Structure formats: C-alpha cells, structure tokens
Length: 289
Image (cartoon, rainbow, N blue to C red):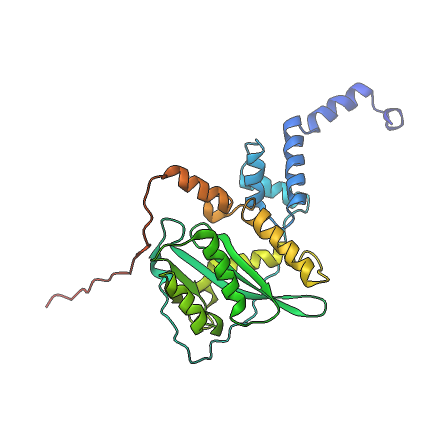
C-alpha cells in the first residue's frame, strides 16, 4: 500500500503514531461500548457510574461524547395511561406523603397498580415500594383489578418488613386502596393512610417512576406469550436486577439494597421512629402606616 501511494514506510508509521489513539483511550472506549450494549436502556449518567466502578477516571461529558459518536445514546418513549377509578363512595384520605421528611426505611410505603398487555389478554401488576430506598418490598400479578390483587402485594410487603405502628402508606385514591378490606389491613398494622388526588400522578411519583422503569427496561424489551412467562421475568427483574443491581441517581448511584446496607452501616444503633411532617411556613408582612 505504501508503494502504491508513493509513501515510505517510515513516513506512514510516523503519521499513524500521531493520529492513533492511546491505549488508555481505547480501553475506555471499549468499556463504554461494552457497558452501553449490556445496559441498552441506561443513559450516559448511569453508564458513567458503571464505568467508574470498573476503575476508569472519567466524567459524564466524556462518556456522553463517546456514546453519541458511537450512536449508543438511549432513546426512550414516554407514555401515560389513566387506569385509576376514583369515582367511588369510599373515604379519600389526605396526602401526608408530600410533607414527610424521610430518614429511614419503613416510614413511608408507596403503592400502585399498572397493566401489562400479553398476546391474548391484559393482566395487572400491583407493587409496594419503600419510598426511602426505592426498594420493591411487595408485588403481585393478577388477571383482575379486584382488591385481592393489591392486598396480596401488601401482605408480601408486611411479611418481608414486619412494620411498626406509625408507618405511612401512600397510594392513589382508586377503589382498591380505599376499600374497607384494604384499609382495615393497614389499620391492623397501625399504619396511617395517605392518598394522592385524582389525575395527579406526580403525587405518587416514586411508584410511577418504578413502573416506567419496569415497562421500559423489561416489559417493552421482550414479548411474553403467557402469564407464567411474564411472572418469571418480572420476578427476576425486580428481585435480581432492580433491587440489587440497578443504580438510582436519587440514591447516589447505588442500588436499593446497597443504599439500605449503607444506611444500616452508618447508623446501626439508631432506634426507628415515624417520619416527621414538615409544612411550609409564611410570614405576614404589614406595610407601615
């Protein structure tokens, strides 16, 4: 090739050494590519955190530049479907969650229901999260929206956490969460009820965020042929990936279980107490006479 181009070998190698990337740059780019391909749904911030864990000293902007050059930036679809029936005669409890200052687990649980479309039917998923660590502590799949579905998820959460009186349970104001059976089970645990207003999904944002993550990273990524197959993959995603591996920017790029472990290590002897309520204050200012 050098003879055909009329260039000496020495000149070719000198020019190549000036333009060739260094070993460190090649290694970094390889790590970013492998991480991005293994976690196709992750944005550049989470990819940066994973690459840093692998031992590379790199910032978010550099990782973003590499991902953009290699066409690895994630493209996400955003949807919102209203599935809550708030037109009922049951009592709607006030929203306590928006004023709570969380300092530990089991102070605030958040719950919600979503639907999953299979090839021949719709099924429904009920989840309960610990709002402090974003960990899924209870979930259940079912074919109907009856109260027994979220109640089964609640029973799983109670069995795994054994909460003390003073816990606050937050959900939307749908019929399942406002029903007598569900409310009585929470009252038996000494829990306080909190509900978001109709058509205000941001008031239950942590649970909505998890559902969005589940659909984007697991459910929308594959086709399920049966209810049994869906249950198996949802269980694997929640218990093996989301709770143990997936990084959360709100948790300092730790997984929920890592975050809970770090909190227990930092304050092993602190006695549990309910969350405090913090309300906005105002001062009346009167003009001078």
